[in-house]
Length: 339
Ligand code: SAM
Ligand code: SF4
Image 1 (spheres, rainbow, N blue to C red):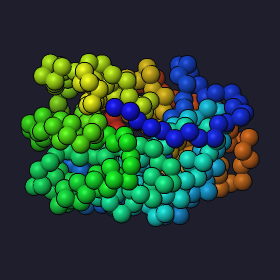
Image 2 (image 1 turned 60 degrees about the vertical axis):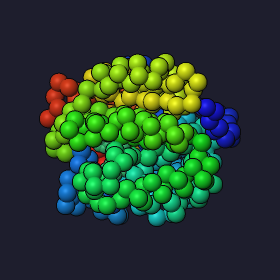
Image 3 (image 1 turned 180 degrees about the vertical axis):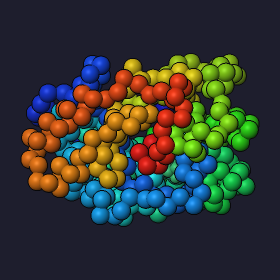
């Protein structure tokens, strides 16, 4: 299968690249544009959760675009918009357009639960979003209601259809595989994605917050071996620069990714950091280390001062997460950081 990513303005001047203390080049930023969500996925946000960031603390589009531009000046190439649910943030296509037009940004993607995608897919595509990751953990209406807290399967499926119609050529379906909750649906999901030209990614639950720890963990290594044998899958590469390891069918028509932070961690090749809606730069998904950029942005710091803070922050990126050794360590939920 061929995927098309539009060509973008090149960056003429790139100052010193961002490298962390372990020699890893950081060229991927995930931006959480809101910590709010219309769903309450069992592994992500607790039911009734309302401790959200105050709106006056949300970075505005000008602040985000400025940070992205400074970051792109030292080698940032990929950006993903995420949340919470990013489509809840008003005028998101406007931000997408500003990021997509930033010289040096080669790839702009979006993670969404797709409940609001049907009405926004076209605008997002036109604004320069190249790729979509859509969360879908089941194809059963009642199971989706139980897993997400809302009866939204139909809307998600409409969102996926709208994204295909809008011309997104690379749509990845993210399925968090939970023992006893949806693991028996994996093969049905493989067929669903095969039939629609979607890439399927199976994800191991990460112990983030009490929600992440309360799920039935499923080791994806045996699942990978079983599916590889059944469908004759071979190793593959996929655009995205992320931690997933991919397999594909021999004819290349279907690709299957595995994100296995627990059974096989990928920290040595980590190339990313995460900006949360309050302007904190989280240096590792599985650690508390972070750097506050909101204060700098709102305190009159020059671009040079922000650039130098960026280098300091990145130099402090932890070597790896400890999801396996210290699963009780993180109290913050995935939705608060931006998954
Ligand atoms: N709301 C959007 C969505 O659901 O795609 C974007 C944000 S969501 C936090 C990003 C991804 O994180 C989703 O694919 C979700 O399934 C995944 N996720 C959330 N909590 C997780 C956990 N504890 N372990 C593994 N993946 C998790
Ligand atoms: Fe919301 Fe995404 Fe978290 Fe589900 S995984 S609760 S859709 S942020």
